[in-house]
Length: 531
Image 1 (cartoon, one colour):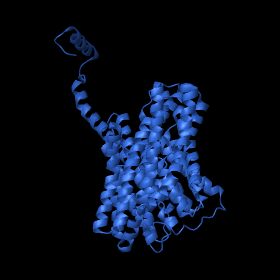
Image 2: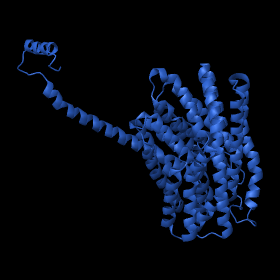
Image 3: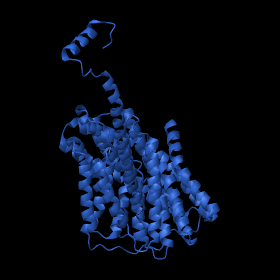
């Protein structure tokens, strides 16, 4: 019960800022109907309950599966098995990610089914599995993280040139959505286990960070590869259903229930099968531990069902309505400011962000305080959401017009950024875009795109997750460069302070070597003379 209460408080801190934001807009700027506001509150409650139960299940079931799987792969001492395990586990955990499920549902709806939900989920999960495998290989071979990132994003740049702009939006949005509440702790636990192999070589915390960032890059690579291969692929027209107010209060929740029950089961069952096989053939855990893991996976299923119903039933539709209503005010500055504060309040309380920042503080023994990381994250994400909103108002401005110079700057900075901060920055880029970004903020920008006359709902409605994921790569590398500069300044100051002390204790220039030796010998013989 204590664990659930703790998770409930954690998720409440995530939901409450958005709820207060909507309430303020409802009463002060863009009033909703009573039914719409009530549906939002019910949706927020289901998201709160569902995500809390889901995170309890992650602690009881998913994370232990990751830990035991990592131990088995490491103790096997077989590199092919370790790499294959990274591929399979990365694939399966990505399928179970709630954020990816929501984003894929959005893509299916807004493309009129031309890109199906499961098509996108499978493609993204394959990319995540491949890059998690590459991350394991990097740790074992002790290859610097920056070299892998340069290679990965070099391939991404080539694939992006071969793709239509719409796939840029889908790919970079998927990169943020795929590393959320379940993937982040699972992959971090795997990376920590694999990094133990190099512990005898005095390896520090650097290898434990960066693998979440690689998983995000895998999602981009997979979607862009699909777009480059399927050149004849044509998108349909988005269905004209969208976010209209339904006839009855509970109608959207009832519609979401059936799909949620089925899709959530398809998400969770592969991970359960993996554990069953490992338990039967290798682990042989005690019945009490086994039962606990199965109960945890049931909580994951139940929480995912409630979370999805809440999101699809009332949470996202309210974000869409608010975005559209703000556009109708014909005050772009007000809309951009709303996006700025919405980005700031959501990232501070994202569950996966707290998992990562606590891990950073623990692994660095408090050298990098979590409050500093959160401050840099919140500022970066606030500006990125405001930029995403502003982009919609500028006719002809596409996502790559921002991403190309942004990632060029990131790659240049990565040459100078310390390795530890570089891994942390790319991990933070993945976790900053969690459930609130993949649901409410994405729907918010889609509502704005639907209200702006010259905007394209597909091209302009997506992309905010991509910009949210990019912001920490810049802000946390800036933090790393500042930290490096301050360290150099402190070292220089220490060197200057030591010079007078060295001069005071230096031998007299007029003293002969013989006299110097005699004085040193006297110090050693006389107990009253301190050396």
